[in-house]
Image (cartoon, rainbow, N blue to C red):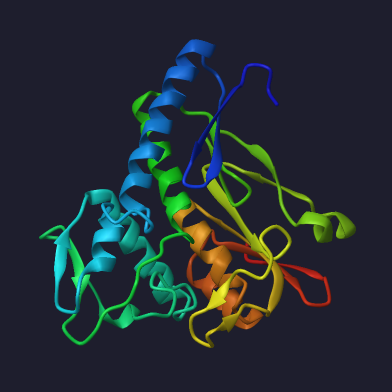
Length: 266
């Protein structure tokens, strides 16, 4: 680590976040990081599906045809989740297969609910941390912190302001000499079975994801990379290639069942 960089950690959203600030004095970096951590806590209170008083908890309690007013952060995170659902042909699903087609978002009214035809249950675990990291970057910008790394546990990291070298590929990358990437103003997210086991659910087949052993996604948005790394676990290589080509700057790394590592995109 750069000797002029300062690292701070905070527990939120069932993970340990780390903020590394470069180019600032320690006390100023600490105060800026504290502001970031307050933002993490705020977003957790909105997106925690296990809290009946949160925005997501309230939405999940609604009946078909009902809606509730939500905070701008909840609205934005859901809009990003809908984007990820669309570009992944439904493999990233903020309702985890319970009824995405009935989700009703009204940005002008700041409300979210369910169409009268039915309802589902929201779970933003596959994108919430990435979204929180994007918001953290905005907080750092307000503090004029231009060079930083924001790390959300083992799943998503955002590199800001200068080139940072980040690990990718896991043990499979080490075997082929591809164990790191250099990123600037980009996020890297990873999904796989090594840490949490067989935990990714395919909302289309309603079975556990088994196409790849692991997947990573690079995107300018941490919310997008978070969601796409999950979707890439279930997507055919051809579909990943099409998605990366349609969205310049998006890069994928996938580990196939034969443990070979494939990089897709530029």
